[in-house]
Image (cartoon, rainbow over all chains, first blue to last red):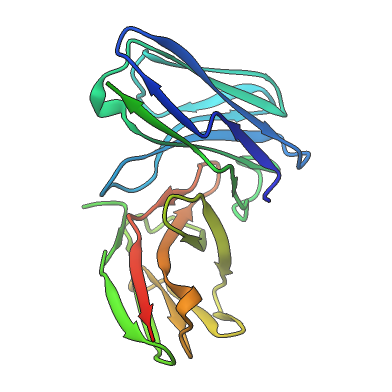
Amino acid sequence: ETGVTQTPRHLVMGMTNKKSLKCEQHLGHNAMYWYKQSAKKPLELMFVYNFKEQTENNSVPSRFSPECPNSSHLFLHLHTLQPEDSALYLCASSSRQGVSVYEKLFFGSGTQLSVL
Amino acid sequence: RKEVEQDPGPFNVPEGATVAFNCTYSNSASQSFFWYRQDCRKEPKLLMSVYSSGNEDGRFTAQLNRASQYISLLIRDSKLSDSATYLCAVNQAGTALIFGKGTTLSVSS
């Protein structure tokens, strides 16, 4: 148990659906991340929040909308997704982003998303 | 050139073997380096950080070669439970970790 909890574990949605992924960390960290992992591809950084402020948006399509109401919670709102968006979506946290180069990431279990 | 490159493998080795993986990175400003382990359908978990002087944790040894811009992971006396995908990750000040695709290791009895 890494202290980072993601729900749901699995999600199947149609292209016209709206759904949200939730992430909660119990580690007292101040930075939270969304990564996408597709088959045969490296983990791709999507968004970074540091002290609730978005500090990185890695050219992610607007059909993915993050929300970080506080340092412990992170959401990823999904709308009008495409089949190629099917992937494992991983949330991670670290104590502070950008302050020390030795920041270690702790990942949640991920949400396996299938878009039909 | 990709930022972080790894040989995807798979590396198929018998129990007790010694196996080594390399990971090359393109950004010479990279400052921190890590190895993560990822089991099938699970999240990546930190295996070890990689320090400039090299470091060891039990059967695992990590090395950094800044001149050639690569890091390595050596696993001695492989166990069945070492079967997994090993991801290297690098970053520089102010940026999030960038990961390689991972190297798959399969240890058989």
